[in-house]
Image (cartoon, rainbow, N blue to C red; front, side, top):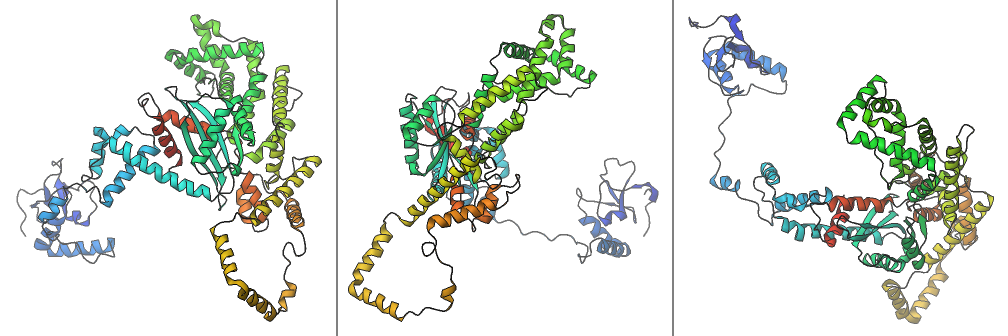
Length: 635
């Protein structure tokens, strides 16, 4: 084939940028064609029309005009893609879209269609789980997003979601949880009172239980509007009404974890319910008592002023960063205290002591703020406080969880506080000693009141990691007796079921049989012959050993087994050993579900604060309860 006179030389061709197909070995562009618009054949040097990155016309050009090069291209392609038989030929013409298909692509989904329901349910879950304002469905950005994902879907208005979709989702989720709770013989709860941004009072109730597969479950039952006076009697009745609304019996409540509010404590005493003081609140009160010292008040006051000065000045923040580089200190920001969280105060003090050199340098350079420079006495006081309280932070965080067993940790933690963490050491300052002694005295006293000490001993005994390690001889004897008595009571309750329809039907059948039934029974007993193997069968409880003896043997066997590693999940251990200790397993399910702190109720109120924002202050109490419930319980 003749070469055009004006065609460029072979070396003048440039390969296509980003090309991956083997066919581009035979095509290229002129060097002057910067935008690579005109494709030239390297064999005949003729331009080939092609669209974008499509190679269909290139293969067609080789097959039509250059047979040898086309065969070479086929072999190269076969090596790169062994599974492909041939080089793809020009694509066949697609069948023309029908008029009906064209219309269907533009028609919106019917509201009864499964696709419309699926997308609507997904949006409803998104609103509930992420605590998004319902009006988001009417915003242009959200509509544009949905339209891009599925042009046929039409988003309903916020009235539909607020009056239909969310209530239906709440009813469904509530019914599922209620069915699950009916299968649980015992559960623990937490409660607390809270006022929203609009000063509306709410009463929370959370439930905690261990299911049949030994999974610890935690759910928020309600955050209900509570406009009555917050007296012990009204709170007691409110809690009873809350359980009744879920068809839950008071007898199934093992324990309720609450803060130290006098009205809540009085309410549980009126209802005669077992109460466990919240570990976080107890520790907070103990620390507040230990801080009642003029030296501490002055030092913390200075610390707050310094942190405040840096928080409101970007120039001082910049200077602090430069000073941190100069003194080779970590690039950390100062922390502001929250009055209701002792942990935030401790973190503020720790960060202040860490950055003391940089803080002094920055304040010394500023004539207007030199008066804020802390004295060496203030720094000594802050260091003493930090040394006493620093180790307690980890315990507070660990005992505030909901997914792990925490109640059995309380007695070991108190023992650890007495022996190591808060034990007075020779190099402690007088202030550090005073803080430690005050905290220990308060905690030791409060956790022995109202039978709380017995509960802590029982739960630690039922935890295979601790058993009787932290119980003295008298406590061990008392707990063994208590466990035996309670297991006897549980066995008696199981053997004496409440008469129901099945029992009545059985009795009716027996009475209808009359004398003929008795005759058949006597005849069967006469004909029955005892097998040889029956002589070697294990005797059931009641045939040889009494129930009390069997319980005592099971408890002794459990206590004789070595303690497991402290990092093992006790529920996983009980799941594998329930066959060997069936009675103790039921008792472990009953008591190990108790939370050590009332943090679940606090978290419910944090969720309520995210729901009732300044932009959603007009939400009705029923809507708040519904949204908080869904945010916590949706899977």
